[in-house]
Image 1 (cartoon, rainbow, N blue to C red):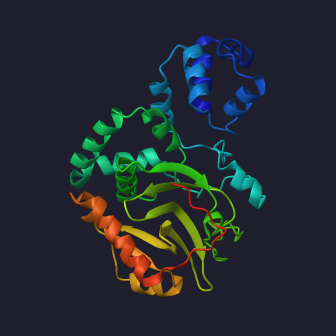
Image 2: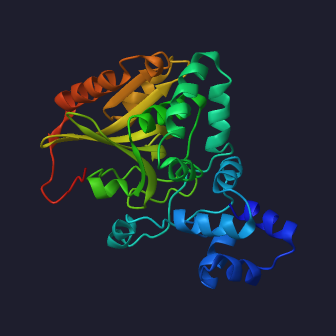
Image 3: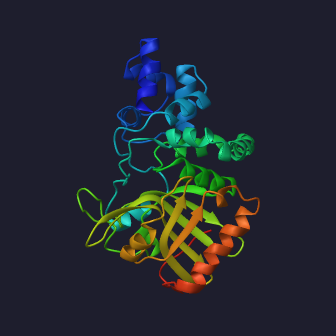
Length: 298
């Protein structure tokens, strides 16, 4: 986002004060956005794009292809959770390829091309389309198959939120950055929240787990709830060409309930009911009572 805005300002020969005057936004807010400390909300995107004489869609699309250089602080309502845990800095998994790159790789695969085209056509008709695209800018993603899974969830009305795993009762001291070994479970992370007819699930992409013998990155850390039952575990997406020879060893070391989806599962016509049934099976096998102090909101 900062790179896009600076380019547009340079084309107009503008300084920061010119953008402040033209957009009507506060000087401090403009400074934070241009320095990459915060992402603009929808109203600010409208003001910025109008001042610069470009469409909001164009700004978002260009930004989707540029990975953020710095960790961004959340500006969403979930900041209350961040303050409650005393960790306001957003945790973003270090990835070389941004979400847009993973999505582009998925669209190049014939297996997903038709599915993603139809999902994007429906997404174009939604009133919250621009907000959804903007929320994907810094969403961690490890493969094209995982990007396809994210879009399948968005097609089911999943919301991109910012929330600490600990806030939903995911209590695992092994959630540690693989480089610094600092505990990150209490830090807010990008996540997707989905309400299904009989259960609810929140998933955090690319979450690090350090065991005694090795470090792993989960495709998705998952927390699911049905009634008073709750479970958290590992959700893995096996793309085309996945080598499963070490899956059993990995699962044994992680010692987490695991839901594994094959790349063929992503293109199933009955994907919503299939996913819900798999989640409910996991809850029946590993679910435990949900702590009364934890509030899951729909």
